Amino acid sequence: MKPFLKQNIIIFLVAICSAFIGAYLALQLQKPAQIVLNNEIPAQFSNYSESLFNGNVAQKNLNIPSNSFVFAAKKATNAVVNIKSLFGGGDFSFWTHNTPISISNGSGVLVSPDGYIVTNRHVVNGSSEIEITMNDKSTYKADLVGTDATTDIALLKINAKLQLPFLFFGNSDSIQLGEWVMAVGNPFNLESTVTAGIVSAKGRSINILEDAYAIESFIQTDAVVNPGNSGGALVNGKGDLIGINTAIITKSGKYEGYSFSIPSNLVLKTIQDLKKYGFAQRAILGAKIDNLNPMDVEINHLENSNGVVILSVAKNSAAAICGLEKGDVLLAINNKKFSSRPEFQEILGAFKPGNLISIDFVRKGSPMNTHAVLRNKENNLDVIEKPNPEIAEKLGIKLRDLTKNEAPKYSNSKGVIVTYVNPKSKMGRTNLAAGFCILKINDQTFENLDEFLLLLNNQRGKVVFEGIYENYSEPYFYAFDLVK
Image (cartoon, rainbow, N blue to C red; front, side, top):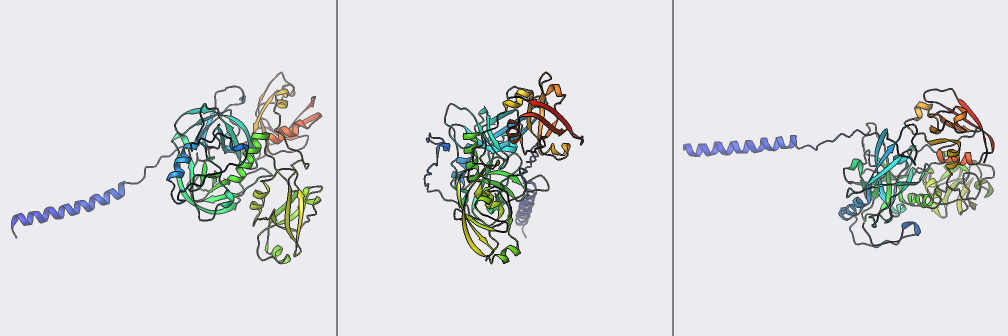
């Protein structure tokens, strides 16, 4: 073999080997960079000028392929904001500025051009100050319009000179299993993040909400949702809002394949109530219900286990008045069928006290129908107004909800925390101190601060606060006379 030919063959072989080695090293080294963020949270521009709260909004039928998220992502990322919640120390209030002792980050969604933002209640609950950062990095201070513990929804408002980008509400009832969806968040001011997945289930309950009247009927997807994305948007292929990202099931604290969103229909009803009344109007049937078991199906000669069974009926409730009984199997409300307890709760959550509904049910195998006038938590037909915080101020105290992280310090109780006591006030003279967790008023329990204020506003004469101090299980009692 000629020397120059042999030399060329050697060079060619060396080049081939180098190429293979280079490719192999590239595959080993080009792994995604990982950013570990330590955070305390475990957890369309339009010319349309009318607020979404003034009624239903007709949506344009845009010829956008449902399997392309480019258009949807452009709409959604501009309307999803970062929410920075500042939490004050022992004597913070919503009305005075104090140096915060902790900060948490979450996401929110602009739902009107005039600055209304929907997010999770757990993102802002107990905060002393709320700061909004838009996708274009502009910042605003937000006012808290109201929160609802039964759905984990909060409504915020910012004031801007120009119309803001926002998302239209889609119909979450029309979402199908297997449909592609996109989760959008704005965590840690890293600009909006977009992930895609499919709807894996509907009507999921994961027992994450602790309120006695909690409505858990989540949309389950496999779109990636990580800490800081709570309160962000779940959108369909057209970029319409179909859910608010709320929770994940995880052992590591990171996303592991299951994410859960509050359906948009329930979100819309809740924020309309918060804007109009400052308080979510929850319709109560007055019956304890559960999913069907095989015995219920057999006794009532049902074809499947779709529906819910009544375990008990409260006296003088809407259920009792319309003739429902223990053992009845409810199948549909206003011809709308449901297959489980969470779906039943979601459908009922769309109504207000005073609404008349039609109920299809089965009693011992016989199909029946009745009509019920739904009631509120106090078992009447009245609209519940937002609790007035002035009564607490007159007593000389400032309060906030007990958080889930704090609950173990107070024997895992439910109550409200006293954050400040004016020493010259009526409560100051009882020796009540900041850090006290109020658990009962005149031996009556409550679920959250709103219910506490409602209960306190209904008291007359002698009032007794019962509660405990942090890491101390023995109860303390503080009595005073309430004069209005």
